[in-house]
Image 1: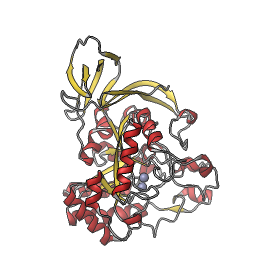
Image 2 (image 1 turned 90 degrees about the horizontal axis):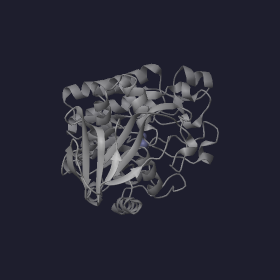
Image 3 (image 1 turned 45 degrees about the vertical axis):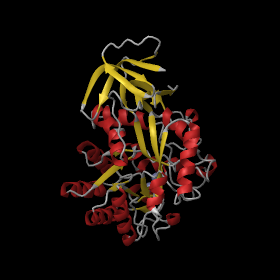
Image 4 (image 1 turned 180 degrees about the horizontal axis):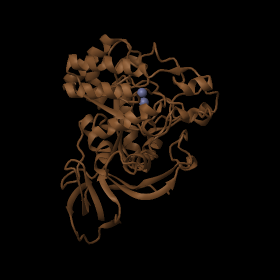
Length: 424
Ligand SMILES: [Zn+2]
Ligand SMILES: [Zn+2]
């Protein structure tokens, strides 16, 4: 089975350029990248006016299976992924049971194979039950397929445990993904600031993140382990990571579309869909995150896709769970807020969605003959309006309902197989 993507603009972030070309895919691999390819009998995908990019990877999602299948499953989550243009996702381990044993890692991989949509790279828990006390058998988890380690959702409070985790992860050649939050400071339900005061809600200060980022950077420097800071949301964290990178600390970082788009003012109507952890921050933080994306301090854009059922979110703000769904709005937000907004050029934006997360996870993503045919086709000019009813994720908890965006994934190709996002 051959697939010919015709007349597209190929975005090659590794080479830092774009060029007009056809792309021929054969037996799940890229067979040719040339102008005017003729391939009799091939299925043709017209990509005129569209971008053909290396397959997008969302390295931070919660698929909720096993244990919370009413929120999302591996099948529904990977369906949302391909609708959002993502050919692969890294699945966080805070499932029920927690992915702290090889069986759970293998279970998630098996479900992903059955679903046959986006690739899934499971993240193994750092500590048993993600309780922050004793390390998991990281070697066995790695052998079962864990691509990285994290206790995401629950920060590792004990600095010694984090030190050991970084040391073991270093030996295994994988990163530790840290949810940086000092719990002794983080007792709030939103960002601590003017808006929380006006609403009478308890706030979590930016310092809760800054303190934890500082500690983990010091430990990464000490151990030589690879630290990946999840969902950076504060100006302080951006500054600390920038300084650490300049010193040569092995650190990478990610930011989410909601943290570079929204401020704590999104909470003003007590919309529980805007209740997220880390919380939506102040203007200066959003500006700093954008600056961090622009100057390379923040390497990766990831969604922290965190589905919750309607009945769980339709409660008092204080009681609602943290999290929003992000897979299907990410590309639109990146192209609208960052590319059209003048923060990133197309090549850099695509790098942060594809080859940079691939590098962090030790994968490769290229559009060159012989490479696995994981590609995304994006219409950068397609205008559309976010409608929560049209999301294919099992959960609809998005604060972006009604947002007018420009930039829509129109084909997600995984191993040469086309998954079309028929939206818009
Ligand atoms: Zn987290
Ligand atoms: Zn998360």
